Length: 209
View 1 (cartoon, rainbow, N blue to C red):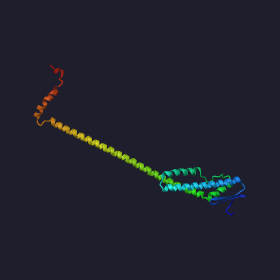
View 2 (cartoon, rainbow, N blue to C red):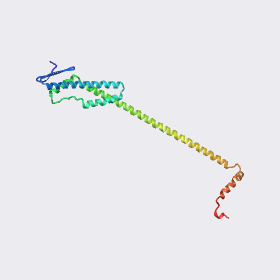
View 3 (cartoon, rainbow, N blue to C red):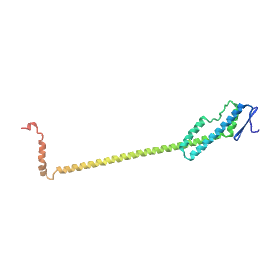
């Protein structure tokens, strides 16, 4: 009886391992105490389950599962886990819940889960940074490859243009050689009549007889 906590003048409560002892003469209040016990067991089960799953996903390097668990744990802590899920105005229920909460170390378990969640967030952030760096490197590589292709294309075009220019120059030289006889007399005899013909094409009206 030394472990029992007196909640009122005629009611006592104790939480020990996985059970509780509650001495009271009020059926409804006893039912509320049992509900508090059930909630405490549920909290402990969910927290332990989350911690186990996070450990497994971390060890297996399952980033998708870690991200899923991260969201689930945030939702649980934000909307389902409460330090005092009972009416604080109910003095007796608050005392009962404090005993259950302390007996199963729910605050310590939740703090450990929160620490684990922080580590998961750091891991996910590092993974995202790694992914971003890889994507940036791939983009840089694609740009460099495209620039290399453009450079090669431009160089190929320049080579072709140079070859065309050289070819035209050669043709011009050949043409010049062909239209420039070695001897002036040959030039006159060969091109004189053609030149005169060109000069006399389309004579002026006053030159016609």
